[in-house]
Length: 119
Image (cartoon, rainbow, N blue to C red; front, top):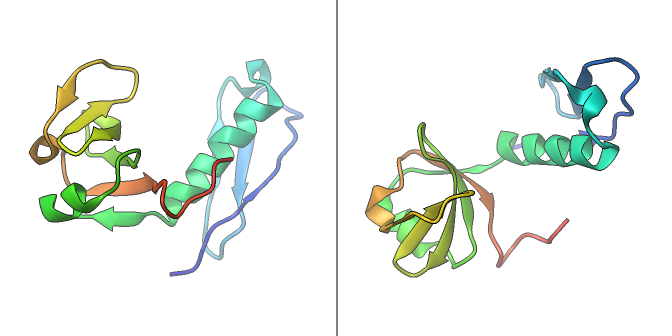
């Protein structure tokens, strides 16, 4: 799989645009970007690039094997979920915990603390 890399974009219009440096990739328009700090716009760009090349998690065995601290983008309505302990996953911004078998699949692995560097 080829990788995607975010090319920093300086906002010059009311909408920000995230350009992904990958053959066939599209431009993503962020409405309301004029009110975002450049660092926030860059954060979205990096997240989108990671999601484009993310590993697909399709089984609960794969979910269970992920290290504590892993973050996946799960099927709707769950969204981003983090592995807090061997048996607990939580939705981003929520204190509700779920067992690994409740992570909606398929999901995309966005962050693996054993292989990914912190931004």
